[in-house]
Image (cartoon, rainbow, N blue to C red; front, side, top):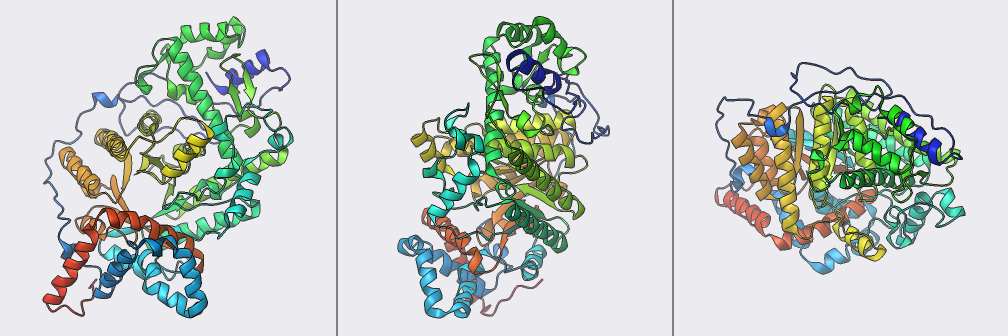
Length: 623
């Protein structure tokens, strides 16, 4: 069953005025599951998003692949001598000063105004000097890819790698941000005929939430201006990838999809993906299997044909022809992964944006009109992604695609997955980000892991708790749709550990999955270490990575690195004036972090006192 047959048939049956779709031919996956040796390789299909089936063993049937006992590794996160071995006394004092300032509410709330005032009073040169001695020096590595090399090399000497992140942002007013967002997220069809479409309000732009920076303290935000700016931002990412490749042999580089094109497409494609999944859930409910786990829901092919016939999506003979000769129905059932394969991102974008109407059973265009220029803009976004992935491959760098808001994320995840299918054949190059404060996080992780197993590519994930909670909750409540966020912090913790457990189980099974545990939560790190010990998973296998922000939680990063674990700092860089928005967010994030826990400050004081009492007043790290 493929878009090649299914969509045109629906269009012919119900939407004769839409025209015949032009879809790239695809081969669909089998739902048959069996064992397969890891040595077998799948042929890569040029220009096609779907590949031949890879029979695999179910995760529930797996056993530990290694019976060789490994010595358990214990990390002492209270050993300040090891934690701060890479820091001189001046750096410890700077950390204490910055973290203390972050607990003073008035300084944090007015930090932008205070920085502007300091610049006027001190002048540009003195202002930059002061910033480099304090906030900038704590959280930013340098102004360009040359100036950051000494810090990267020093961290590497102590076992800590880098995820390079060029952190320059536009300094826009709220009004400017809202105007840019509305201009870039509203299509020509919507401008001409507001409300005359099949759009859902969650996936439409709303001016009161146009400034996506609102309520967000730990994520960089891009606003679309034009295609030339997207090209410039792509070049910036390319320079970052090259710098990462030149600075280390196993580095990461981070990118954001909203920097690479008009966000209108991400909204529209997200809505398409959600509606197709909802249609699957509707059909699953018809067959009485909607209460099962998502990957256990398998539509019986004959019943599916009957349902489609009853809904009037085509004549009985036409429906029979859709499945003839396809491997998709060879097992007699169709699951969510097979269903997702209906949507092929290599087709014409305007034809891709077709959605099933559950009330009529018809396939309808998401928009009544799609201009040629909008088509070109969306294609260019896909091309920029492809260019970045190729540069990452060429430079030996792994590319980490950051997560964004839930109304963009389905499209971001799907496009990232398509990059993984293409570029993760021999090793993990592309990493997707999963936000575990989302109610659907576990389903998203399990579905993508299972797809990687069937198709035989390397799964790469970064697990985070999430950066947009307050904004997401406020938007859902005001606009009127279900809150996508877990009810409380403990529920998010449970979700994080559940997702992590599942990926670790996949690593134990196949050694083709890879995960970055991106967290400042010491309990989560200890949980991961304990699981690795239980599995007999050595840190030298480089399957589990740890990640923290530069300037934060060194008591976690450096003991892990010196014990041989792959651990990375997110390393922001950029000119002082242009990273002020980033520094402003770091101050806000640290206010909550430092007020909630005095642990890092107490450890810094403990080490400083130890050195002073031990006569190490002029201590400098040796490497």
